[in-house]
Length: 153
Length: 89
Image (cartoon, rainbow over the protein chains, first blue to last red):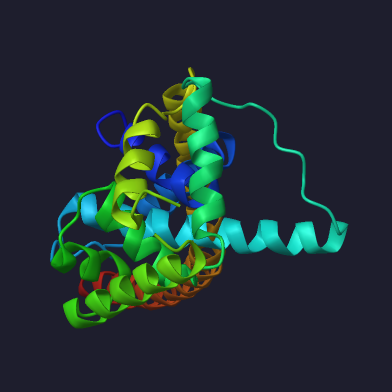
């Protein structure tokens, strides 16, 4: 947990736009990983790191979808207070990132975050997202095209 | 918009690099994992008990039945042996 927790929370925060939500998602991911290890579902075909990122990606995207449903039901965005251990600018940047990526489909958003923010290779991103390198490349091209269209350079 | 998408992504990556878990996150996570492990163990014990208690009871009944039958056979054997011993004597 100590070896991987900080990076996973930062990645989940970049998906969710909130450190508190990210901590919940990562904690749930560790419990899922524990169950999967006990059940022998980790076969060692990918590294432990990419395997954990896969679980966190799915869990964080699930949290994001649930939150979107709750926000739609409430017909207003839930107030999210200052929740972090980092400086104020990091939280402002988190919201800017959220605004920039808000219209991207989940698979494009996670592929872009894993490459541009977490520094994974396309092969590793394929392992994490469960798709081929070609599909990763396609998602990245589409994500960048959508961002250029949204915010012309 | 003057910065390219790549420049914006790099800048946002740098500005969010200091994001991390709040104090106590590791302890909370380890506690959650320990509680989950204890719950899993309890569930497993109850599940195993549900399976093994009826099987154990059935085995016990069969064992008692077999023991009673063996006892009957040995009683007859003893009676025959006693008769034979008396006749010989």
